[in-house]
Amino acid sequence: GDSLIMDKVQRNATVGEVDDPLEAKIATNGRPLPGFEMRIVDPATGRDLPQGETGLVLLRGHTTPGYLNNPEETAKALRPDGFFDTGDVSTIDARGYMTITDRVKDVVKSGGEWISSIDLENAAVGCPGVTQAAIIGLPHDPWGERPLLLYVADDPVDLRRQVVRPATGVDGRLQRVEHPHLVAVDQEGVDRV
Image (cartoon, rainbow, N blue to C red; front, side, top):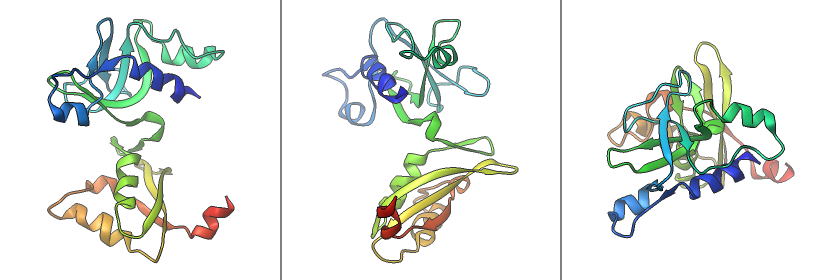
């Protein structure tokens, strides 16, 4: 799939240095290698975003010439200026460190905001008793999409109390726009799929 190709591109486009701060080694994907240029752009407009803003990663340099045997996807991803659309949602900080936060295909786009499926899934499985979680973007008028959280729990769990309510509290795990609709799925139903 396309993610396998892009994963290999990203691994070969950024690197951490031996003398990088520990925080950068642990929390980022490193900085671009020589011969690579990276930009973070607004996916809707293609405009460059300021450092620290989350957007789509474009990569130019010694990358793949495109998708193997898939000229349609190559035409979508390879831009006239030579930048390649990686499909990754990332930030680049003031020191030049890139952090991949999600994949465009996995992000829920709601009311102009990008909601990370990974963040919501991690918040859910971080709750006691929740063994599996998945976010699906549901079509929604007027917001475009809204997140639907499907989850499996050992026992009945009130995720609204554990995941959604704390968002309005001090710890602020979730922004209000990220509050998902919740659906519990029993383990027997998951095993049948």
